[in-house]
Image (cartoon, rainbow, N blue to C red; front, side, top):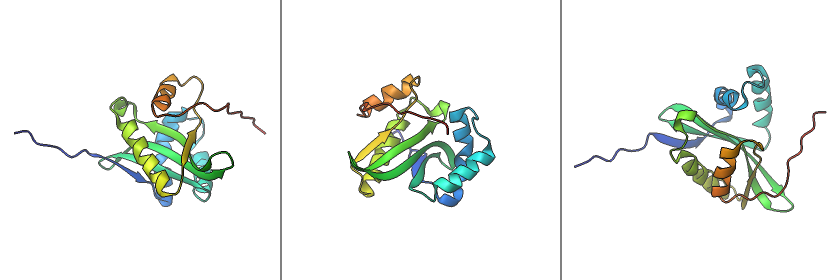
Length: 147
């Protein structure tokens, strides 16, 4: 008789006071674009705005993150904008992202959201496939200008 093992993975909102625990993963995602000090400063501001972050844990180890911005938009109503999604490489391709997004959608619905949107880099083809499979559609282009 085979044993059924409980999954070691869990999803949860990262407490504001623990937001800096995501910095090592964000550094991997962005190839160290900003220093840890800059990220600490920015995340300190973000958590005081309409920003939250969810984590994927393998037991106690943080292996994935997803930032979420909550706002009301004239074209879509109350929305969750998914931001900086990252799962450690050796955990990718195992269905964990799909389960994480189901959890994120349920969380957003519990906060009254009826839509989810996101931006992804043009050259990030694996993410495009994932988001298409999640039912996202392309609505426009995201423009960026440094001031």
